[in-house]
Amino acid sequence: MSTLSSFFHGIGARDLPPVHPPVPPDTRQVSILVLKEMFRDSADFQLRPVWPGGEHVPGVWLCWIDGLVDAEAVSEQVLRPLTEAARFRGAESDGARFRLLEHGAVFSCTAQTRQQAGETAEDLLRGNCAVVFDKLGSALCFEVKNPSVRPVGQPTVEKSVKGSKDAFVETLRINTALLRRRLRTPELELRQKRVGRRSGTAVTVVSLRGITKAETLETLLRRLEGLDIDGLLAAGQLEQYLTDCPASPFPQLLHTERPDKFAEELLNGRVGLLADGLPMGFLLPATLPAALAVAEDRGQHFLLASALRLLRWLALGLGLLFPALFVAVAMYHQEMIPTRLLLSMIAAKQDVPFSVATEVLGMLLAFELLMEAGLRLPDPVGDTVSIIGALIVGQSAVEARIVSPIAVIVVAAAAICGFLMPSRDLAGALRLARLALVLLAIFLGLLGIVLGLCLLLLHLGSLESFGLAYLAPLSEGGFGAVLKALLRPPLPGDKLRQEGLHGGNRRNQK
Image (cartoon, rainbow, N blue to C red; front, top):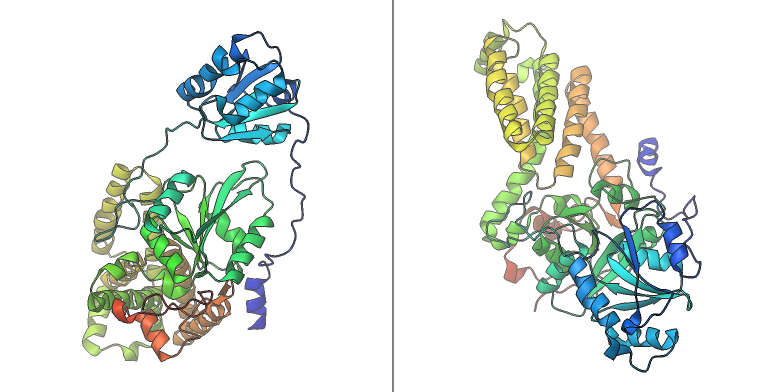
């Protein structure tokens, strides 16, 4: 038991210092020659000499990255006021001209003074343009980002019936604005970090002052500081680098594309994480009951929401155990099957040349192939492949006596149960556990299923997500906490936040 636990936790040393030192920033003084050297093979690096106030002043340059800036904004907000003579009347030196630009001579809401070439290059890559004064060794960077981004659309994975119809996009500031519209309080804190030595991805840690647990927030910030990777480009990278046990297939960060669910979990005491370029938000700590809850639960009557939540728990158990139980009973414990059902199974099985184990494993493999084909192909082709695989090939396999109808029913029922899982990561982990239980049932029967369930419960019980048990409150709370996890109580009576999430302010309403 201890060996299994140490295997899953051996890779999770999250708080150790990075092995490789980060790439040091370029600390050379700003000059146009240094910037041209840094972007020497970049065709999108643009620069031109400018005359402040229309007077011939050598050594002043305007540079930007084509495609990251709005060309019209550069012309109207920076270049036009920069060349107007009236704005620089009386400015006889570069220092005086620099101070005029710094204090409002250019139509830009932001103006950053830079003394180092590395800082100037970072600003250029974020969508700024830079006015470089070679003689001063300084630059002024103005924000003129290209506004062509994907607009806010509807959720595509987490469907909304009674909730909001907007979803996160790939632009970080749009996502933070969606949160600000829902939580209009200065207690909403946004701490921004840079992750990736090459990508420089902006990551924002979101918390609510007075509600978020301080230890959870500090742990996340410390782990982000310890990240030493070249780039952060995919959603799965965050989970693998930040979680306590990255070897476990079970999701240890909750993710959502809906800002309303994100804001609701912040009010519950969780910490949020938004990354530039990723159209989703991450929430921590994660628990198994939280992965089975959906945002629509709070918008429905508590009896209906409780019934649907119980249905998801039932689907979790059936999707995990149904194929393994069928294999174990059909191979080792036929006396447990009712007589009429057993005779029906024997009649359907007579002309099938394969064993029950081969049938179930083959159907599970066929289901995974259909899932991958439907995901990787374009939408019209993917739908066609699913229809052909499920109806034509499946029906033909049954009629040709390659598989028995009962095996098709069992695997299809387990697959439908998997589709009820709100989290796709949780559904994928359950598919792996289901396959492992089927293999144990093939070799050991019901004993193998019991052994597999014990190992699974041991693993889930040993998992922690940022200091909170993965099975909480099922493993830590009393009877009332367990009922609250399995059912959704009426909102007027749900006055307390979950123990272990909040930072001392447990009451959410009077």
